[in-house]
Amino acid sequence: MKKLFTEFSIKNVKMKNRICVPPMVIGFRDDGYVAFENVERYKELAKGGAGLIIQEATCVNCDGKLMEKQLGIWKDDQIEGLKSIVDAVHEEGCPIFIQIHHAGVVGISEDPICPSPYEYKNYAGSVVGHEMTREDIKSIQNDYIEAARRAYESGYDGVELHGCHAYLISQFLNKKVNKRTDEYGKNPEKFVVEIIDGIRKVTPKEFIVGIRLGGFEPTIEDGIHYAKVLEKNGIDFLDISYGFMSEQEMHVNEEYKYSNAVYAAQKIKEQVSIPVFAVNGINSAEMAEEILNQTNVDIVDIAKGFLINPNWANDAREGKDTGKCLNCAKCMWFGQSKVCAGKVIFERDNKQK
Ligand SMILES: Cc1cc2nc3c(=O)[nH]c(=O)nc-3n(C[C@H](O)[C@H](O)[C@H](O)COP(=O)(O)O)c2cc1C
Image (cartoon, rainbow, N blue to C red):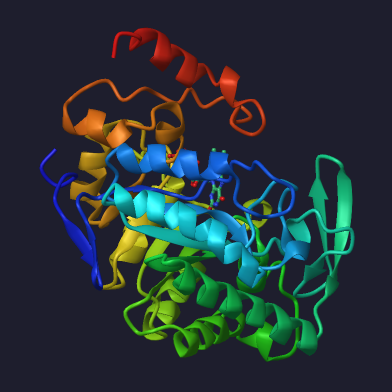
């Protein structure tokens, strides 16, 4: 595991290895405030030896939630609770970024917004998002900027803009969703670039501002284009995942060894010089090491691996069993974490630990 356990830095933030726990929403409270369980969860993850943790999608506006039980960063009095997560993670010697998020048309709002009217179909039926006015755009951009200011005041080492997986920034970037005829449609990146500029004005220059970006938005050429535009506009890192789920055009050779999201990260890394993170289906330390060496990405995200085994990185370093995600059709962690088969098997096989 030569490369996996080498140090890495983004600006002044030092990571002891190349392993990142990416954002994963595991909600506890309906009101957006931090619960004791949130703090305990991040403490346990930080003890697990990762080089970096990115806190779960945390909402910039209570109307932009993706689910009821989601953390929030839309009010100054939420800072106190968020600070306790930061302190718990820092005490274990691990840096932490926070993912800031607005769901747009794919959220739970009864009257959701979208760059332009778009019919989003979900398991419960379908909903049409109403077109954002210029005032809506300015107001939501300000929510992201204020959220980043609160993140800085809470002690986070940086923010990650949630710019993929069909949420609001992804809705702007994907031309199949964003049909606006003004400059926010002609230059789909304008929405997020203005947010980045605004964050830079309210935080010091050492504060890290990165993005989780869709590699296929809708095509890989668009993903590469946006990555380059964001690099030019001063983004500090690119965490590459999927784009607007139902509006992607992924033409990846079936022979490609890893997931399509890893493919996108590899292609983007060839075109930019800022740090690039890869994610999806990286289910062993051997695979993580191979991806770092063969694709040239800088960081690997291990998501469900850490849900099954919060000590994933320490176990990987010691050559122990890290557990395996069984890729259930619907991830059991959404609501029924106790019956996650990968976790049950891992805990049974490692009882004596
Ligand atoms: C329970 C759960 C919650 C998630 N929440 C988020 C989130 O808040 N933000 C995000 O960008 N991705 C989220 N994801 C996606 C993961 O960060 C990751 O991209 C995905 O699980 C694939 O990585 P893996 O194969 O290592 O699990 C979530 C995944 C799971 C299983």
